[in-house]
Amino acid sequence: MQATYTIIVPLFNEEEVVQECYQRLVNTLVPLNEPFEILFVNDGSKDRTAEIVHQICQKDSCVKLIEFARNFGHQIAISAGFDHANGKAVIVIDADLQDPPEAMIPMMERWKQGYDVVYGKRIHRKGETWFKKITAALFYRFLNRMTNIQIPVDVGDFRLIDRKVCLYLRRLPEKHRYVRGLISWLGFKQTYVEYIREKRFAGETKYPLRKMIKLAFDAITSFSIKPLRLATFMGAFFSLGGVIYLAIVFWQTLVQQSTVPGWASLIAINLIFSGVTLLILGIIGEYVGRIYEEVKGRPLYVICNTVGIHESTTITKDHTSIE
Image (cartoon, rainbow, N blue to C red; front, top):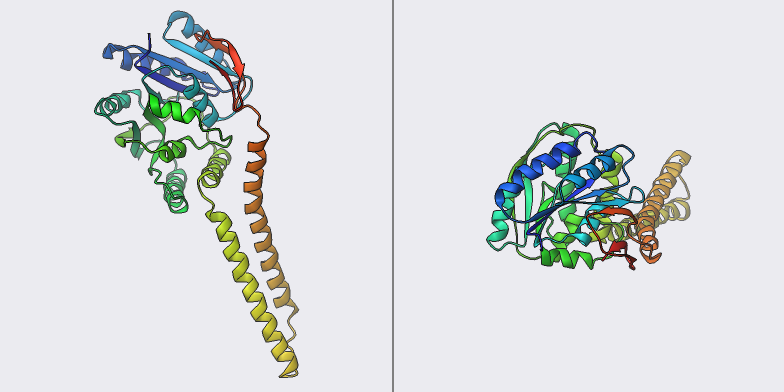
């Protein structure tokens, strides 16, 4: 029987929270009296996360598990969940309980009203530093200015999508994935529910500054070519400045018969031009690197084990999946 809801929970070293996450999800879903499945995606955890989920699966047939052969990343884990979701509606939620499972109920209500995408919008973020709050707010607004699609601000991956949206997501093959951007790009009828983001139940954040910066680069390069255009404008601007400066030097030499000694200024100008050149090459390199990753054609992820999913394993063009 097809489930009404599939709950996708990506996991990476979450042994301290996975049992509580499961219990909170069950306490929220069982009173609905609708069939559901909880799909845990173990993203190469090194602790006891997989062992704990195996124990849960033995006790509850509604729980399924996908285990990656190594750590492929949070966005890839979510994508694997989409590839194997069976529900009419699919909900993505992290295991750390910062996004409260109880907030899924109003999402389901909006879905039943006819919305295809219902995302959670944070109105308050507990337990996060001022630096993270400010940088997150600036990033979402900067991203919207850089792209031609409207990506909701102050939202994460916590959202409900209709099955037809999920099926379209399976057809998007890019390796450097920014899932919330892909969902916005698809369109469909969207709305949001507001909620308060809680502190982590236990453990440490799995999105340190390094991963946040990588996600930001993936988001910008996946949905905008404006950095390349900016590099072109910068190159043209500084080239024009160089031509003007060269004309001034010729004027001083040929007409005024004098030149102003200024090795320091020349070195400074040279450093500026070299810095701009390296910046432009770096921007181009980011795009070229992503093209290189795409054309290799490697699987998006590799599954080493599953629980509760009985179909045969096949390797497709974009990922190792179970169909």
